[in-house]
Length: 553
Image (cartoon, rainbow, N blue to C red; front, top):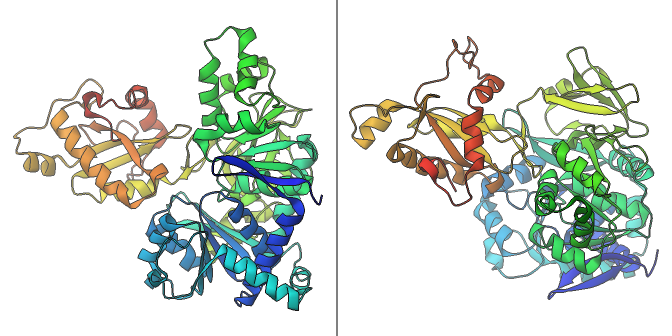
């Protein structure tokens, strides 16, 4: 591939190019520098940063050093990041700059195994950390010096890597809220990238505009590893807010995104005449787009049908972090709207007696890091138990019909464990019960049952406010006070996990109404069905509205 462009990235507002030869040379030097820092095969290196060229180089370099990449979402709070770094035993952490460095510094005393911090910009004092601090450029220079003396150092380290060699540990929230580290091998990742590429209809002439976080397995495999396998150019958008403006500049032929992005695009053209929708969508996406890919959350059928009718293939797929991630995918040659496509070549899917989707193949994880019990449960009988319920039609297309587990997947693809948030909320003395909602939505909401004795005493009122017909309390004084307490409770979690709007209920959830089991476990589906109009109200309010006080912004 040599001088052909591998990456396009913005610097000072202008897209620059990095060719394949330079890309490989930087990754090799980074790998050599990590080896010089005594990073051994199997050691963990954490990446705590937003997307960047440095992130991609660091990932490739870490893998070439036979080390294990641990990607952390840039939005994690300091305690959340500390848990993942400490639990994985990471010995080196990459931070882009001051924001993530400041979080890391706040918990550095709890990270005794950390040997080095690497940053893109030295815009914070080295005294923040007890271990040495290096810049990316310093490491690349050090790697060049090492390779001048030992030119085959990285090649020899790479020779030790096999398909079963651990490549990455990716932490994902379980239904209990306890983060679990998904162990994926080089064989898992490579097989999934190659299999997806084989049916995606892509070539080295294509150009992908990439903006999803590389800390998420979807973008990591599809935008990063697949494109490397194919040898195509990847343009890094500055963020979700610049995707459309960046598309006009780089004119991509392919884009990967989550349903929320496509919902917004469709809303921009939905009121146009049908003949104008396709032209407008193509113009918004740069004029050369051939296909779009959706994953990470369920794609609304009306959006998929709208894009198809406009002449732009919008191909939905399905996967999990535990499956590297792609399990099934609608290809350009075999697309059925309303399904998530057929299983990838080499991937087996069967439906259990209770309807659960089971998966087996080279893409399935080794297990959960330091969690043999969870591994045994997830990989029972040699199949990955997805926790999702689905159907396979006569032609092999898979449809997701439900979710066995309680994990919420927002429309932006963020996985959120509601039980963890609910425990956080009910730890407040004013809150007796809480149910978090938001599957397929752009943000989280909650139904709150207060401890009325505590509320009435604090607010100095003699009686509980009257509810409406559904049992929702509209008293602004009560709701606003609870909103403030919810906001306080949410400060300990990342922004995508925060409950933003609430509805206050007058009465506890009841066994008689089938809202809880006899052992007082929440029956979420029954609760959401009963309060569906209330929940719909929370999402229908304008962004700045505090209608009846039922919003937490």
